[in-house]
Length: 347
Image (cartoon, rainbow, N blue to C red; front, side):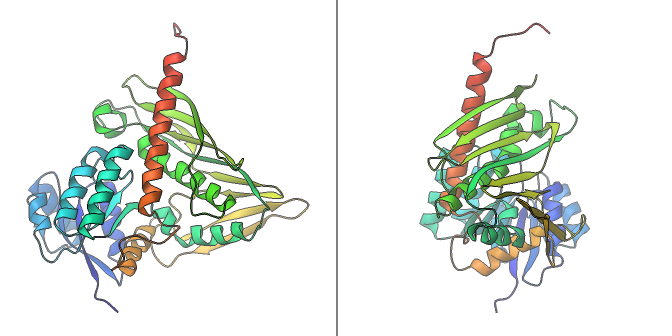
């Protein structure tokens, strides 16, 4: 068994904190260096989590021979440059979603990882959790019959702050890029189950929604159609609480997942699950209990995958991430078209 995989964390915000806190309980991963937007922030983060080193700049962290893999937890527009620099330095990369801000830049990062021969994964951590593996198995077995439709939402409400990341166009704000990748990725995975493939791309995407005063999508719903006849309705938002539930409809029942996106954490409990509703039967409750936080499960999947360069399905592989980004691009395009075509109103 290999020694612990040693991580460098890029970023010192909330997600970086959750990741680092989770790895404190891992027996296969540990954080050994961190870099932030300033050296004082990096040092404060290192002191808080007892990390042995704090780097003054990204280049210093990437030059550290102790760092084998990096976790990128910065705002979306920084992902491409930081991932490319990490790949060039020969580091394995786990990058928070979205991998980049569009499909073209994601393709550049993926191609760089392919050329350099390093691991790369987009950090949709729900795809790494045992909840998803168990769910996929039951669906493949036909627990609710042939799949017909999914309704999946990830929309929350925070105060509108024009300077904040979520409401700033320059920082790639808005619901689609921040959380839309979750329901889109689930829809594509389920469409793949219908066709007995890992994932399938939609043939049509329509969208409606609200573009707020700062120019970002504050709430939007997309309808997806797939060649098999499977359909999906997905919602993303940052200024309206649309919930975080997924409901999968089959020919003979449905599955309700209360929170598929962040299924377990040390802070909110390690137990999760879903309910299966079948015609003429009492609902079946399926309980999944993890032994550690989802961020740790995700990081350990990286450690266990090496020396392979892509994680195994249902975790996000390169083609899956690229297809997901293309779907997000299409969602944004469809929303813009719908917004432009909508008649103006005097409020």
